[in-house]
Length: 383
Ligand SMILES: *[C@@H]1O[C@H](CO)[C@@H](O)[C@H](O)[C@H]1NC(C)=O
Ligand SMILES: *[C@@H]1O[C@H](CO)[C@@H](O)[C@H](O)[C@H]1NC(C)=O
Ligand SMILES: *[C@@H]1O[C@H](CO)[C@@H](O)[C@H](O)[C@H]1NC(C)=O
Ligand SMILES: *[C@@H]1O[C@H](CO)[C@@H](O)[C@H](O)[C@H]1NC(C)=O
Image (cartoon, rainbow, N blue to C red):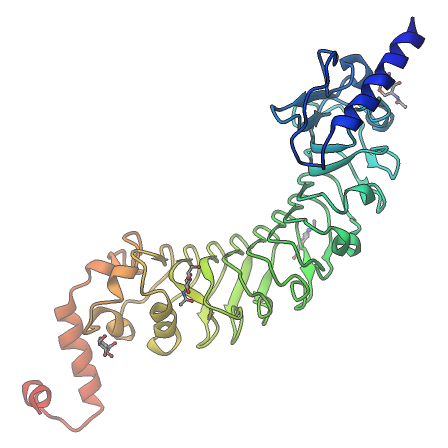
């Protein structure tokens, strides 16, 4: 019984290959194709499950595999096509799985456009496990596994990889990312992740970088983003950054539309630390230790994002709303106050955008004049 059915499978496979067009193109259903075409017999790949969409793109869900050999066995089945659209292994609901390693043989001859291996106990992905996917892989999500190492040096081989998600692993060091295609990098929740100042210098097309909860400490590394031509979103929230020095944020153009440094320990942002903000950029500095918004340091930042509205969040900072912020309150064009969020309060609890300008006019001008020859205010403003 086994032999004839095997022959039929092979025949169908040949037929399928002859009718398939270029990878990713449309495929027509061969006459007499078995009901599950283009997926293999369900029993051959169990406990993986195969789906095909209306264009016969293949999706494989192996979330239920129990160990390494069971996963490898599923890919020994006969498939009508080797080019899969997606592989998903999400073991959130399969905590007893012993799946631990993706070897160079695990996926046989199969290659993918999207791979998601998440929430597993996988601690090893062999450098050659995905060589067949070098020309096709667009998304690689290996978040929340037990990986302490990954063959990052092979990234440059992936020709169309756009999204790389490595959140929640055990990496210690992130080496320089070498990729012309990469647009999205997510490396959140990796405790004490270290990296050099040139970590992004060989990935010039990055648009989104997220590194929150990595325990980044002290003065923010300088020139980290300086070779990025189209960086839009930077998320370094929930770290322990204390200070931004000159050129901390300085991509090549005004491309940044979202900069999130909330929930750090920032006390000080030096003048010229932040550049490259697009005019409607959202700036999140909530939950920091900022005290003074001095004109020299912050006015250039406000000027960059002046096309936005309520787009600067400084809530939960011990802001001292004295004369050093008179430049915001008394700005003759009234262009700065509309940028500040409604929940931004001074350390005394007053809403910053509701502060009384009259107070600043009298108090702060007086303070200024105390240092100058005594002239009465009306005379001064009329001359
Ligand atoms: C893998 O898991 C399957 C299903 O639980 C089991 O039958 C098989 O013995 C396991 N193989 C190994 C090597 O542990
Ligand atoms: C990270 O560093 C802190 C000290 O800065 C240490 O207490 C903590 O244990 C480290 N975490 C890991 C996972 O090494
Ligand atoms: C802001 O971004 C838009 C859209 O990407 C772009 O067209 C514009 O040039 C940017 N603004 C500046 C000042 O570069
Ligand atoms: C107010 O706006 C005018 C016209 O845009 C500009 O020339 C002037 O420099 C602005 N004043 C301040 C203090 O920004």
